[in-house]
Image (cartoon, rainbow over the protein chains, first blue to last red):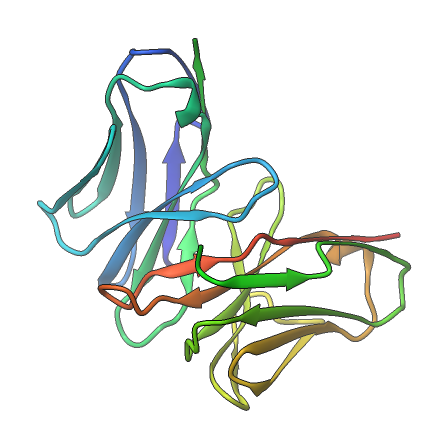
Length: 111
Length: 114
């Protein structure tokens, strides 16, 4: 069964304090790994797709990396507006339309 | 903005009543999805559609049905709502920008079944 585990469940940072969020996954052949950001009361907002081990994607203060077992979302010098819940999801090969989501990491960045 | 709207945005209903949620997209995407999000769980796929009148079940489809009579609209129906269906429901479309594997989500519908 495909599974995604995100850690930590919650993370508090001071503004400017860099850190990483972890997404560990097991999947029967990875088609893609997705990162989303979700603000309270809103739908998930797409951030990145990663397809193969060694791939990296960047957007502003965020950088996502992928290995064969996990993905990291690195946040460099975060700002309070980066506070949100970050979701990781995987999609298996073989024509499945299902995204398997983790429970998310709630990030709070204090000024 | 992925051009997705959901209606209603909030609904309170009673156990045993039928409920229909609507997802509307403006960008002519072929694939549309319904997910539910509950505390302690990740988002879970209920049903999806790969074209007009073409639908398939997701991992938590019991108690739900869907219909897609037009490309732009995907309806989720709870034939007889139960308290376990209290949740936040998200519609998604599979994007056509760049690689088309990404799913883009609507704003959600908060449903409370009393």
